[in-house]
Length: 294
Image (cartoon, rainbow, N blue to C red; front, side, top):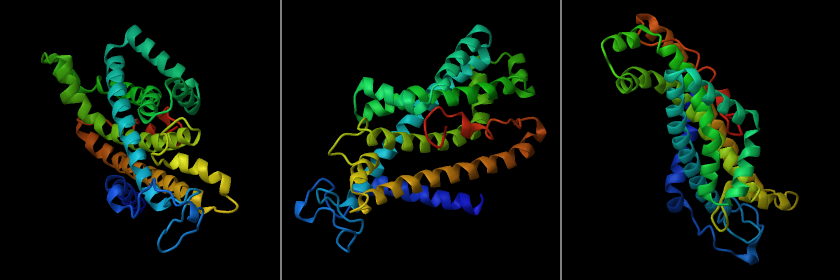
């Protein structure tokens, strides 16, 4: 991978470490107020400063990483599973099933992802689980479109036609001859889907439709800090940097992974076993989620 991709991987590793070890790394209780010390700037005792209630911003930022990780992983897992299944069905079945599925995908993609997420979250109610559900409902379309396009190409390949002629069933063909070749494009799509989910969760929490207090969330911290941008900019600065660096790292890693796979595809496809398709190159633009994946 390129040096930029390695840098992205390092940033992602730091984010994962902060999310996994946040409660142990946090120097203080993220919910403990200290009203006499509110809005104080960064210091040795509080490297990121304190918010309007005197809570330690570093501790809250570390705990907020776990919320972003849970939303990102859950959204990607649900969207990936649902979109892959629907894309395989549309690609293999064809006919009216393919037509119905793709028209449904087109309808969902016609609306701005953030507006659909806001509407669904408002209807379902503000909570972490409902954020994951809302983002998954609109997130599967990108995976379905990618898998369907790849499947249409793969089913015409010699190794798939040979398996059909030998009497292999649809399930065997999918699991042994199609899904392994979809792993690369889906991995690239998942990285951009993850970053989009992080941005979407922060946006919904900023609007009060995501994680509710006292659970720390980067979006909610940004919303709180916007009232003190002139007198205490650190309240919004550090959670904003956390969102920016996390999304930047994931996107750079995704770009590097996509380029690495594109370089390997032609060589692997020379024997006819792995097609040189265009799905991984266009995967970044196929996510229905708001944010960098859109």
